[in-house]
Image (spheres, one colour):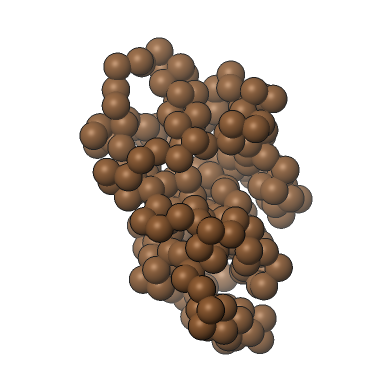
Length: 225
């Protein structure tokens, strides 16, 4: 892989590998007995919306939302008009505090972030309905480890945002000489008070981007209801 690599090149290579073939077979078998989220067309949305050439930030999640109508292929994101899940509510609370904004009612659709170069990547890309973490260990972690390595190798000055112990497992895949890593607890209600609130990651990200002469992220761009 080199600086001209496209996600499509990477995906076509990975799909030939034995682990990925087995992964797809496993998901096919799971679908015989339960509903799987997100729908097939949305599983790779993070790569469609954020080309490798524009990646400036990576926000790493665990696995998709497991209730009907929530998962859209982007970590922490839900379709426009969907009720905000608790973790996303806390993300928006922290975001508004970073920029001292209180009045905005924000949509949970994070596509505007993705289109600005924020790769919204889950470690596991599918889940069974009503069963969080149900697709852990079937092969997605191998795939997303490769994604992190590709970003680390090809890009420069990327800000990796790791929230919670699951995301922190990717820490050693990142070249810390080339990139920046921001770490805190997870934004879920169970752990948000252990370091997520007050981490100021959105503000710090924009400062790091400005210091590199890169365009900062407009976190509020087209996010209003």
